[in-house]
Image 1 (cartoon, helix red, strand yellow):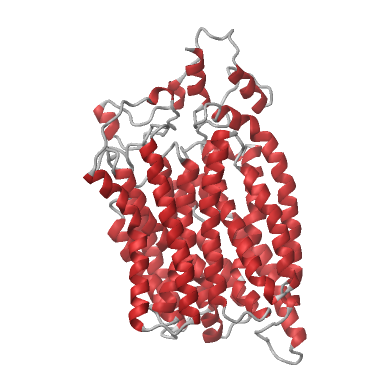
Image 2 (tube, rainbow, N blue to C red):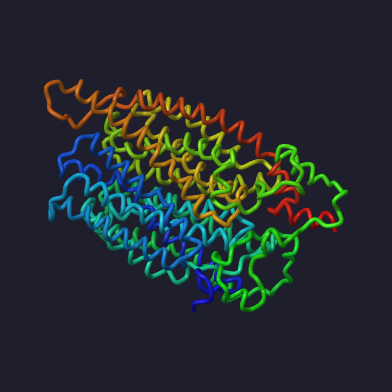
Length: 581
């Protein structure tokens, strides 16, 4: 099956991308292992005798592993997706297997070994997520926001999937959950890795059938999320029999399989082929290392390079409205005299690093997600401190709302960017304003507000993810997208280190010592003062993020007007060629 080049043969046809998307659902559900840290963190704390600060540092290791994906980002252009998935499976097996050995006290391990093991285990998420996201973004280049929302949405709902499995099938056993992570993730990836593969991308922007397929996938994912939320609450509040528990689990599996209905339908009821109108569409450029040589062997390249798409010739004296937008977006620099890529072109990672917009997006994303991950890592202790002892419901609520935020963030930003040319980071700014209010609600320490605060935080947290991904691809292209995307994800461990480990863990332990004088290393803290200062700092950071986002939006607005002037994503050079015909 291998073609020439690093990624193997590109699969032709309209059905394979949808099979790959359905397979990516299972990959992304498996990739949510980092979200279930609160389910077994208490067991780690008790079994190994750690204090809150030590446990918080484990949470940082959890986030570092999940989000430091520079290596899979680099290899995404050099290795086939199945091999990246295989490496991720190995990380899960050895990492979570080691943690399981430590928690069950099968093997005594020092603290630093446990940190490394947890980091390796959750790093499987980076490998799995990179393979699924990069492959599907390239397979559906004209629906980036929708695809990003779906792919990352299933990662968010994976927390509820694991929670439902934890409550129903694993009898609330943290050790069984760790064993499932060590064995279940590799099995799931091996089963579906053949189907996550590069395919001929869909280039028909007016394809109503494709739109209906995306709507079906979104609706089925929302149904799954609602079902998991209801099933988790029922299982937590009622004493369900084993038969009902297995029935609920079986329905969950069927809902996870629902995206397969699309390729099945396409097989049973094939549509008539349409003429491709690809000459005016953006098709991101890839190096010969990025795609298979199969296309070159056939003499029909899958994706045309941007440099070959349009070269200004005898039209130098003509200035179009598009040229004006380009000049405004690039600081009044003439398009034809500007060397190197412009925003909207395909950047290399090194070229993107020297752009101010790249770092503005990084800072804005840091302010939103870096603070949000602090609440997620300490969600169990936050709930306990205000009297919500059943933290499983809180985790499930956060996971569901995170999922809803990702679906809504991808879909709403896609709609407004096409109809109003509204830059996607506008929604990051809106949600960070809401996060300021949310952190202030958390700071009150009222039991009656904990569920409302968790709901708002989950939605806002999810929107940040769903908006950042297509924004990176639109401003800097898909050539090194995997590396840029994983670089952006580094804000999670950075935020967790500063806001969770250094701040939240310190404040929590100090308040616990104050509440328990004379007790050596008190492990429990109760009351609003356990996290109040932490939430005030997080609210201030989100205020700063909102202001920076305003500057960022003002800078990139002309770029979005250029890219979406026709109502669909078009590369600036390609669109200019069409205008000059």
